[in-house]
Image 1 (tube, rainbow over the protein chains, first blue to last red):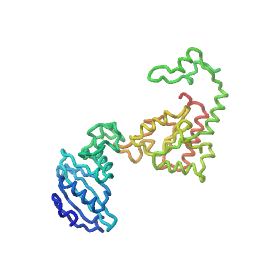
Image 2: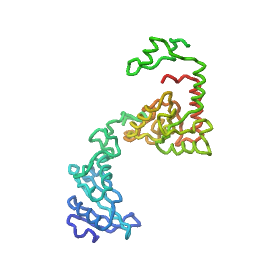
Image 3: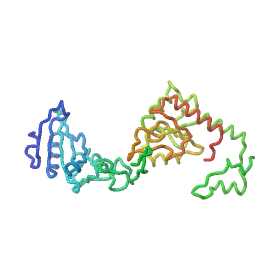
Image 4: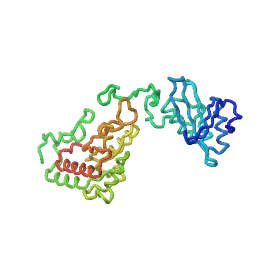
Length: 155
Length: 182
């Protein structure tokens, strides 16, 4: 897609059949390109529709951050995939899209991915006193507060 | 005056220590306890149960329907939903209890003046309902882990008639007068 073609670090931009997938373009980018990609979307009148994460540590050894940017002018949905190493921090985009503040907090809460330069990176869904390091949507998550069994079955 | 040794008048120990009332009772005997007056009060209490305006999830919609004109909770004297816990008699726990709601629910329960009662409405408040599975991290498996529940109403959600039945059961319980240890 020409929108991001000039940015270094955009590995792959594909046009997608909207009727089949529900979005128009898929971009796979490197972590260094994220600030510039975000700024480009912002300047082009896009908003951040949603953001989430996938735990792909077993398959690829990475977390996949998924951003969806939309615009209502000429309706377009762009999906951005960003693969990060579990040990690294992703750059926060909360200073560009304020909506990212809570979305990034949710990703941190559920997956433990940390965001650099985030204004307030604390849990958002789980209780604040939930044990540190416990992130429920990780594939290997075991609830530290679980009572050990449910319905008579050991967890 | 009733017998000071009557076991039904004994208060539970708080953290293993006798309460003020208990110390007082031991020293001067029960202050005033007239059975017929208690019965009268129980009748009044049972017939004017004021619920707390308080809903947790989808069961609350059914609770609202029970309060609206088609079913009309006021027929039982229980239609006066109080916006303040200080004025409420009964807490209808209507809906899934997420773990983050434990503290607010405890606070509200503590704010309610005794005597007070709790109704667990729906499968979620009975044992976690459809959200209970091994290793779940989000919900409380049963309202009775937080507050003492008097009546359980099964259903997902229960019909308004089921909530009515629960209130009638609670009335029976109050009129029986065995629940005044709080």
